[in-house]
Amino acid sequence: MWKDKVVVITGSSIGIGRRLAIEIGKGGGKVVINARNKNRLNKTCEDLKTQGFNISACPGDISKYEDCVKIIEYSIKIYGKLDVLINNAGINAEGTLEEINPDIFRQVMGVLFLGSVYMSKAAIPYIKKTKGSILFVGSLAGIHGFGNYSAYCSSKMALTALTESLRMEMHKTGVHIGLAYVGFTENDPEKTLMNKDGLIMPHPPRTMAKQKSVTKVAHQLMRMIERRESKSAFTLLGKLNAIVNRISPFIVHRILLISYKKGQY
Image (cartoon, rainbow, N blue to C red; front, side, top):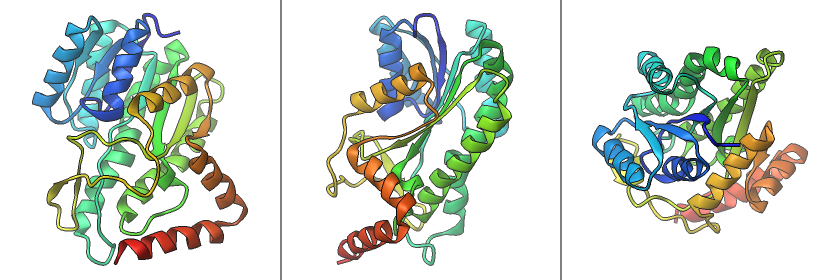
């Protein structure tokens, strides 16, 4: 289904976003990649072009609505239409609510939640014309919060309400709205997070659960769009988390609390 489809992917200079651009490019799609880091974005664009993919790059900060409009208008100018928007851009911060700099909370919500809102708002008029898809890349952190990551979890949980509301608003348009609860994924070596004071640090390795490759995650995200699925929890752990959290949130809370306590020692 991807041949000649025009796809905009936010946060796509590294990680899942970059892999999505590659896999969609393999299927014949035309992809606009985006990131705030202009140099890294342009390098990714050139790398993918040398592999024969139809790729364009538009830098921009999606926490600013005017940048989101610019990204969408650039895509229309280059390719003439828009079939799929994948809201993938992410930023993470570690620290308790008591200790964290309040501005970090604003930054995380600005990218993860408002960035998705702004990009979707800018894209909707064009997506309606093609009866295309808007996919939000969420997280298992959007099912139940984790200690030390309240900003990240809050922003991911807010995507559930956004997608449910948007699905109602788009019900007569033929537009597909999807939300993926992505599980633990292999970190890109360049992935970073902010500490409680706002300092940028390398993202620590994940050891608490088996990690999925970015290629497998990209394929799952693409299948959601192909099948026009509204919601999906990735990995067996994620599916169990979603089911148990609906039946007995207390059980999920106790399990995560035990893990949180262990991490403090």
